[in-house]
Image 1 (cartoon, rainbow over the protein chains, first blue to last red):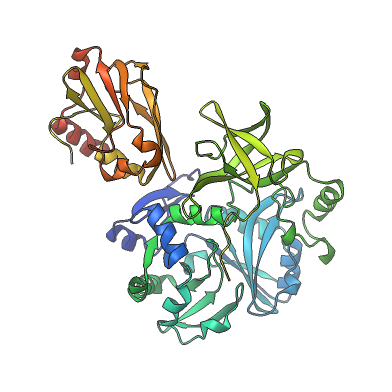
Image 2 (tube, chains in turn red, blue):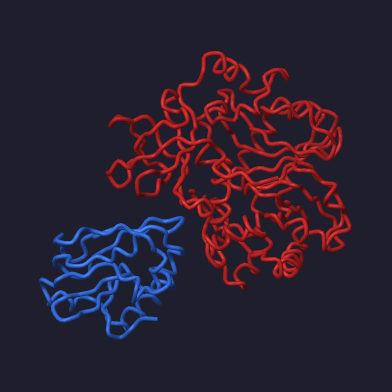
Length: 368
Length: 129
């Protein structure tokens, strides 16, 4: 990820990460922890118990006013009119070509108030795009600097968080959220995440972030909770086949090519990119994002070419070991005729073709 | 963390001279910077290497790094245990995590490498950038 000019931005937990000995790296213009004890150990902690992530670099944008829903309907591909108060969904901020300005989650707080969470490296671009394509009585406010975000993920997340809040967490279903007190402070508690596990994303004011971080670690440590960095976040999301903006989705590939047809609701009416996507849906895509696992010995990495019988058919967008599955996996765009499950192709690793096979995704699915 | 009986490269490999042979691996600093090592690619026995030629690759979860041979010579042994247990590089980088043994062709070249003290000074200077 390229880092913009100027000094790296810091989350409210920067000093805490450094004090705790995290390994810090630049990520999308931010100084972020890539790991604490080690990516593999953190990854396994999240699958087996729980992990705590600082994702305060993510952006939050509020849509407020009588035209809030109309604005979101025009900007995004999913159907925000289906959201009930307290519900969240995944969606795409689309270009006219049906590609991604960004991907995002949309929260409905009230008929005239929504919030979207966007990628850290895209905050300024997204806010400018949203304001530039919004008409009528709606205020688009960037709340990123006044919002900290902690992700508590894993099968024991609810048990840990419940110790710190009077909210009944068992009443919050997956992809729903509640507002209430956590550690006596106002918070938005959302049953969402980027790991493929059960868990929560907790939005609080920046000044309360460090106390919450420490309290969660203390409450969770006896249950196996570990502080985690962006390294494990990336391997976890890849096993769950959740797209990473800049790798798997971008402004060059459409929602349909990214195999995210389930967030495309053409029937909801006009929105930016609808015409292009409707046309593509009728004609069929020529390339498609697929998940594959390595058969030969080697790890696929972003940008490695993909060959079929020696001829280029695509490129890897994400690749890494899958620590929980014990194999090497990846995502990549390939010509649609080579996208069927079971298809074998070669990933070029240091000039050598290494065999891989298209598999069903997500690679990992938790038991519910 | 940097044994006195080894010589070091600026690319963070070590070599231990054993008679006319040299055992090669990566340093504590290198394994720590990489994080969990998940894959090691090594040359075949019999390959002839020049000093600082790449002889393989070490991969962590997130990163791919080339390996550079501290001394010219023929590869006479390869640590095949790393194929199934790449984590040995993290656990024991100067012992079970060794990578290759070369038959040293030009002993004079060893004088161009750093001793432990010089390597530690080099790391300190690198870290201060």
